[in-house]
Length: 205
Length: 205
DNA sequence: GAGTACGTTGACTGGTGGGTCAACACTCGC
DNA sequence: GCGAGTGTTGACCCACCAGTCAACGTACTC
Image (cartoon, rainbow over all chains, first blue to last red; front, side, top):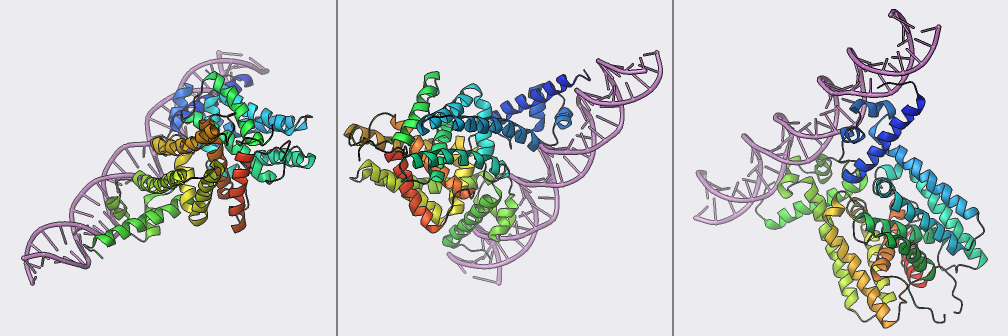
């Protein structure tokens, strides 16, 4: 069914992107075929190439869309007047909720882009780095205000914080950590407690 | 040159494995061809299939060799009579030093196995999980003894700790974090300070 | 209702690369 | 120095799949 309605063209594109999310999540980017995406979308093979220049561009689009939303959320949080601990909690919350609502999309972004040092990770390094830098900025400000001690550089703290979050998501993806609904909220608290409060018992409470 | 000397056969195998490390690190497992490995090793294409059943088996071998060494090191550390903070420091040290001495091998293991949720990561889940469990055991013991507070489950603390380490290595792999010689030792301290001590200033020191 | 533009189709092609195999090279025991 | 066994070679096969394209269908215009 052909149409000149541009709204329908947008939906077709969306339909292909959504199908790609599930296929990439299930089989991985390298292992799946473009025909798998077309089949999942219930669309002819060639139509994928009508909307995207290449298989790579499908993944690029998925990543850039979602990462943009993440960066906006971080910037938004940073603008508010909150203790650093609360800012970090908001960021952890946002990422955990992203996984809760769209686990396949987050899996694809993490497995195929964020952690793919040889392919898409390198290509999108600037965008990924932007997130690290924003988190690092929050830590640096908290160190200046005295809320955080400065035993650790901001860039390093950002990596530890973001790494802990990604590892928890990876635990869910691999079924190594329990992923029941109540575990998601618990995870937010655990991440902030560990990174901000530390594992050690304090001398005085 | 053929030979019956079994020692030479072992060296040929090693030669192919070493070549594979560099090729996988440079191009990635999926992108490289078996002929690239053979070329790098200075060996005929078919010889790779004399020593290994498949391209996959080459990577499996590299991973299992190295991960076994890591698990042994963790178990060894765990057996010693040390505060949990020192045990975690020893583990972080071991992993950071592994990267310092053989960055390509560690890059391959992390990028192609540990973080590859759709391919080799799934296949080696049991071995990977073993590391998480050992670290979790250290945390659990420290919580029982009172050295660590129990705001966080041991399984979760293990993920945060290991995730922070892997993210730092990823930072070096991506050239996002500075990787000068002095940064390696600093990283060990930073990891332990962040995870055990926390980012926040303590009320009383 | 003829014309046009665009969405849609899927058979086809071209290149790639994992894995095979038959032949060859060298060593060693007898 | 003969024959058996093992190491080594690389041309070849073939399955697979990203990307092309010519043709078709539908909706909208005038």
